[in-house]
Image 1: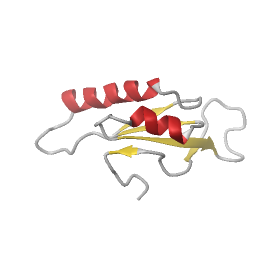
Image 2: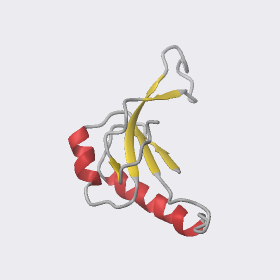
Image 3: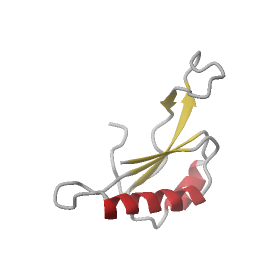
Length: 100
């Protein structure tokens, strides 16, 4: 699984980059005889569901976009901050139950 954390709102071009990373891992690191296909999860600070759905349309690589947020009372201005997952992924292609 490939995780990518963005410190800003979702931008459609993030899908192309994540797709590239997932394909690279699949080609160079995955054992095709043992391992399932690689999944990509993009964590962003905010997203517009319609924009995410349109950006993922036509992408055959299993990718998901979800939001993250800082836990209350954690981090207090330090660079390393704890994060917690936001709502369930807005879109997943193909259907992959990432919230279970």
